[in-house]
Length: 381
Image: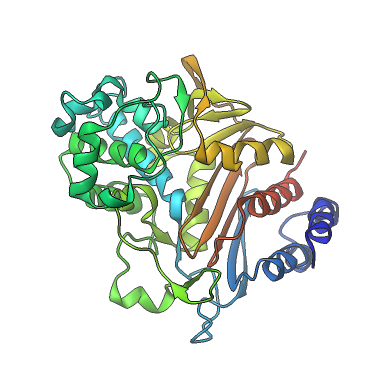
């Protein structure tokens, strides 16, 4: 199916699902989502995809294709996918948890928690700048020759900004990576141990890992690139903090529901990730999540998730004071590794959310269009 027919199918999805009210009408909901998802998978040769939706407190799962073309294992809601940059939302939540515990100050300079940065250009920024990609132009990745911990630390000591802190947003793995390390340092813990004990456990996540244990490896999907060979993520500088989480649709929809209605021991931390600090175009950058006033058009979401927003420095406006997002806000985050692609979005005011995980990194615009169409279909407006 060509791109024009896919676009037409996605445009019709809200209309089709409108006849599936309430959203818990499984047969009609499944038929409509099938009609939207399968052409996208065919167009981009996606081996497998797991989708979870929540509406009005009801959760539904939709599973497609293969977790491994070699073994023939099929996808279900418990299949483990690499989250890629969706992992950044956990790193941000750890920082918000450290703030809520009185251990981390967002207005502090990074060297308070990362002494190795003392005297560097990066120490002119704040912890908040690290968490919002506004530290002065840190790039998406560390240079190839510095793509391990020792190399990255040496590179950071000589890095020079291209802009003053708080003036441009340049999406960056080392930036969020340093946020995670600052939070862990403030808590006096190893980063992955801190996330597992302080976040995964309270959220009730049973299928979410940095390092997939042997007992769960049978559920860990293989990713696929253009050549078709199965791949999984390689280690690199700031990998755990920036793109290291592996999880299932079943667990990730729990995360969405926790964000829709924060409660329990992580309430303050979850709410902390719903604060907006900088505006870049129509998108407001918080800790981890990117925010848009809801309702939001597909075109606006596409612009906020465009390649230029990922690869380039974009001027920002600081929100003073920081703005707590109203319930009528769409929060979203994309994520990719070499063989996986995902998208998560939710709207607290509508009590709706969607998780999309796949074992091919198909184009972000197609993910955003599909996710937006599903959310529009679930909306009660």
